[in-house]
Length: 277
Image (cartoon, helix red, strand yellow):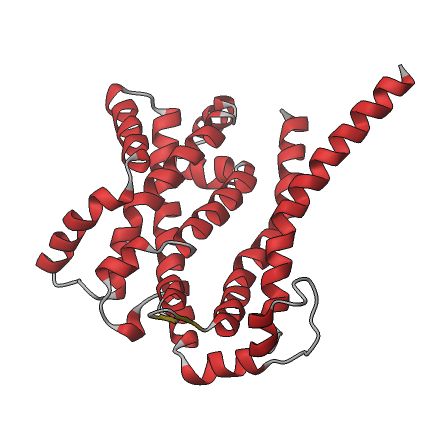
């Protein structure tokens, strides 16, 4: 039994280490490439360490591109899309989970279906709608386009979290004189904080990495987002690998910091909720 347990634990640890390296090695390689000289990058003699350290790629990125403008646009678009999706998705998810009806179920199923449909099928329709509304090539128009996938995703996730919260909490709040909105704000949302935080971060990550919509709906170079801006660093068959790697490192920082900041809080909140339940 001891040998079997040792073998199973070793295999499990090996699988975990394999997937961990599979996730971390590309990120590590991207970071060290951003600090290599151009000659060292193209020679490829030291793939996993830096021989000649330089920050020239970062300086060139800041001076010769609109990186800060792209970063600002991405923060505005992703942040506004997430805030709007969280607010309306919370209300929709609460209504579906607490007041079940045929209309609510059909609405939820429609949202899931919309989220599962490839986004490329909506590009032409969104283009015509935004052009009619004179919002084409604008950040507000891009935010509206992002809502087509962030709002269904947020609603779908939050329905599961709300359904896991006992309805007796709402009923007690209603007996004490709270309205439905009051019960949601004072009783349900404080319990659902871990779910809200997790959903917000996941939704922000999806919006932050979006490429198709800004590529199709934004024509002005300074109004585009980071994903399109980084892709535009390729000029024909010429790749500015140093600047591209530096931009990717800086682009990954907000999501990495967000996940690292909330990880313990989310896990702690979920564990506390399960114990109380």
